[in-house]
Amino acid sequence: MTRFFISVFMFFTCIMIGQVNSLEIQKLIDQTVWEPFQKAYEAMDAVSLNAIYADEVLRVTPEGIDTKNAFKDKNIERLKASKESNTKIKLDFWFDSRHTNEDTSYEVGFYKIGITTDDKTQYIYGQFHIVLKKINGIWKITQDWDTTTINGESITEKDFNKK
Image (tube, rainbow, N blue to C red; front, side):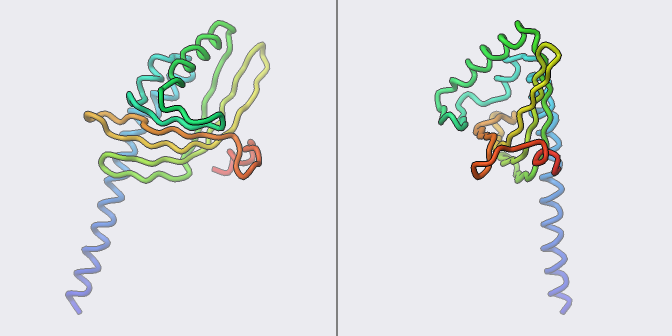
């Protein structure tokens, strides 16, 4: 009977250690990926934003699949145009689920982008699925999928506020 309790204790201890380790890694990802991502996006700094991505990225949107990193050039063009038109961008997001180990993290969440031009703000809501890999000791986005609809229905403020 004692062996049984020791086995159960060891099993749950291993699970708890794994969870603590994942949480620590996720904190590091928040500091090295998500905080810089948000700052770069809001500052419309495409160079810094693109640097958060790996050299080879699978990017999927409702418009199709990009395996040639064309989205990086589009980031430069789009954010430059936004700066030139005095647009302000505010990004907010939250995670619905995160699965992380020592070198890979799969993260799903919802975003809200506020785009203000001429004192008028438009909001865009969506869901993202991101895969991060640790490459040469640095966390990088290697897969990026997002959409503004789920099951044919637009994602709205109500969906975003469920967090």
